[in-house]
Length: 84
Image (tube, helix red, strand yellow):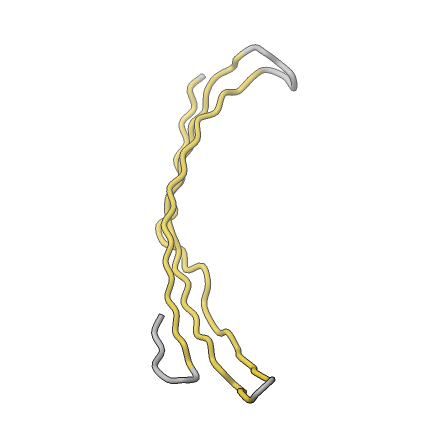
């Protein structure tokens, strides 16, 4: 967060995430026969930038506006591997 004036607050936030899952597939809806395995993973992140601007401020009444850009995606990768 950066506050250049009393009426404007600038915010820049970043997030990075990695996920991985291993699955087992079965035959039929309630089957017990194992058909194979499946692994998938993904990784990446995003950046959010926005400004909070005070438009009006008096006792009992305040008005702010939030302006920004969300979900600037960075490097999302997906990989899958099936073993049958």
